[in-house]
Length: 260
Ligand SMILES: NC(=O)c1ccc[n+]([C@@H]2O[C@H](COP(=O)([O-])OP(=O)(O)OC[C@H]3O[C@@H](n4cnc5c(N)ncnc54)[C@H](O)[C@@H]3O)[C@@H](O)[C@H]2O)c1
Image (tube, rainbow, N blue to C red; front, side, top):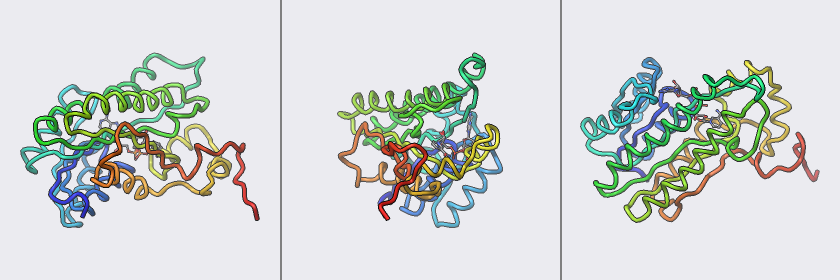
């Protein structure tokens, strides 16, 4: 059990990748403090964690509110006895083209994907530096490392996550806290499916660029997050772990190549 006797705080835990992170952490022995806007989804995740034999404490929060993440840290400490890991997973998508982009949409995306992830990591790190250290994972995206049309705000927000993660890693390295970014590729979640539908995107053609030939299962992304939180990653710091089935290094246009 790689996370035995540890408490992990997770934002965006009501759905998709955040829920999978909670289940992966619980499977490795962690208790979980879970925050999200979606009360019903949170309750479902908590029930799944408890079915796996671990404790779950939940709070319905909007991560863009200034006290939301300090309150999740307090919940972890008061209800579960500490905070050793943190996953900033709450996020939002966006599909506006640059020439039509509104300031409102830009600010909405930055508030959730950048500001909230940064200040969540800050809240977690403030506790960890005074209580024996810990590990933090910020959820970025392969789209923080490559551009995509109609994704100016989203790509920029995820690139920002990757950069501030590196800065946090440098600042906290001497204080017992590791900070790494996790950059998923196409992962089968409600957010991803919503974006496909909103923008009329052809999933089958998109998957032709993925050498793995498929979307990620959320459990595969949860497993990568647990690795980064665990002592298996004790010398991994300021890194961006891309879990995209090979999409990023693939230079071929929409082709899944085979030598056969
Ligand atoms: N699914 C993908 O293909 C993919 C790829 C790369 C990165 N990501 C990133 O993974 C993260 C999780 O996305 P997902 O695909 O699991 O989506 P999802 O919609 O299944 O889950 C996102 C969760 O975040 C919560 N959330 C959103 N705004 C919030 C707020 N202001 N306060 C509190 N909670 C809030 C939602 O309620 C939801 O439960 C996001 O940061 C997303 O950008 C997803």
